[in-house]
Length: 462
Image (tube, rainbow, N blue to C red; front, side):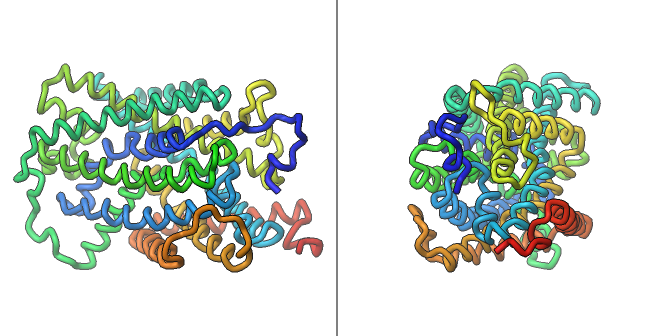
């Protein structure tokens, strides 16, 4: 039984006010954000040239079938919490599902704020174009200030937030359209396809580099599932959730292709690769606009990029603040996180906790933040959900499924192979971090279960 179903009729509850437009806006605002505007230099550095764009192709070939996994789970179980809910029900709420749900919340407490923080970091770096000479201390303070503003704007009921989400999304689309339009008018194919010697030498090093480029691509696509975290607030979730996921992935895939070709068709990739040695890599889109229209227009456009970056972190914090809330409602997390605001009906404690942790994470480097969040998610969330959808097909064939994965089980198997490839091609330190996080999570679950006398320390669980 979902929390909303179990609650008394007169208790605070979440209202279903997000339709297809708002849901798609939420996903796409999260997906686009500052990601492609700040990761293009990192992407090109992964393989040392424009051939690294293959990484985004690999990424989209993973997220499309994985989006089908999310769609089937989200349409069948439209409750707040997303992955937490799917893992718990997929593996069984009394035993292994408790472990899977706990591990997801464990990794989420690390990866959720890290993802939001990456947007704050990207925002602060683009401010560096408007105010040259800023140091690390100033960048950190700017990132923290944006995080505080985000909390303030989200500290309200969901109705006004839906309208604000669409407004932020409109700014995001306008920004990307300006980049693509400018690139189309000034595109230089010789610059865009200036491949270095041996660009397609399919060696072990190439496939390791492709894995690195693909992980950056995955980071940029993260958020195609964001609506699943507010399933309790979506109208007609059985149809809206799958459609919004598909529309978001396809739409952003074309946008990313256009943005990448536009930028490297005007600004040679050799000017910002390797990214660590070129300060202008922090605001490559501003450089792109300055090269075309001059500093004044570039400064105005930088403001549009900042708008886009904020739209992303706004969508992220909105969705992620619902996860500890859902877990607490079901007794899988501290009860205080399950509180709704008495008059405005939103999970204010969870919002404040995730928001403040995100501000703290924004004091780390962008590269470290991206590596940490991707590795922790692959093992528990993405691979775990593939197992969950498979088990639910076998154990609960009678479950109401408004959306069924096409060509099942091929998409889920394809996505699984993709996630394994991305994890296996990570650096040894990153792999150890991901595995270490998982092991610590299991140990934490054992201690917690022993203290509350639940499975595996209670014979009452069935």
